Length: 125
Image (cartoon, rainbow, N blue to C red; front, side):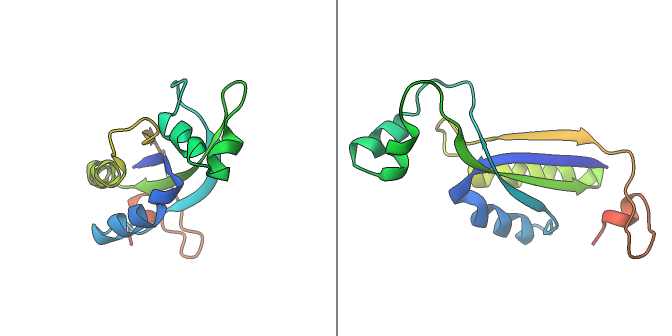
């Protein structure tokens, strides 16, 4: 089994949840995070600041700023991982910097607290 961790744009959260549920992957954990990639300038942010948007203006200034994002975490059977990655990419890919990242890590075991089931049985819906 694997843990799939995706960092995505805040405004893509609901669309991503729906897309994952539509392909049968509804179990996930989400949290608000802040971070930045290796890029130096977010040109959309500059356009937003020029247009007078307060959120964009507040993120400009000296040095690199941390951008609000969402982090999704899912523990899945190995066979479901390619579908999860494909769905996340298709839903979040805009072709612009800041679309996000997907990480996949091995998970040794899982136990469902309510029933004591372990392994894939603990994470299958």
